[in-house]
Image 1 (cartoon, rainbow, N blue to C red):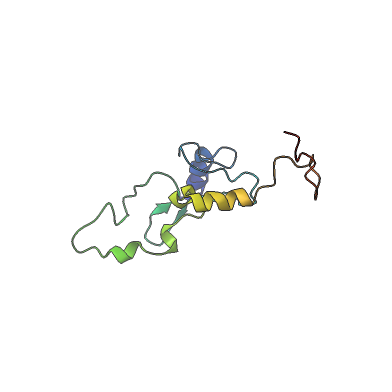
Image 2: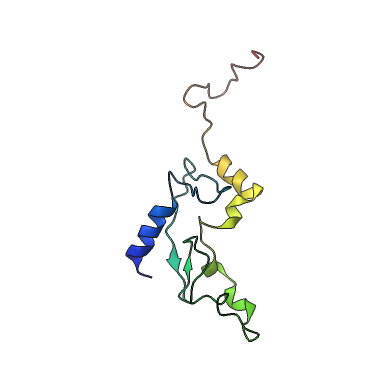
Length: 117
């Protein structure tokens, strides 16, 4: 797959630093993490395009002779379009990178709203 087509697919997949086609996908907006484009790994499989099928993928060409280890490693995981971002731990990681929504209207060291509710 050509780079320009990858870029076109990536633009179609994301809106405001999130992937609305994935119901529980987190938003990367305000976290400092930049959404990355799909890439083609050394096996010719596009990773991160949300299509989940590639004619070169071992999954599409599975046989008794296929060694599952061929699909191990970072080359099979997309940094921002991966199901792992939907886990509570990773969603918490993203939330910890966002500034509180009260900024710039909160005091940096005092909770002036304490006891008012």
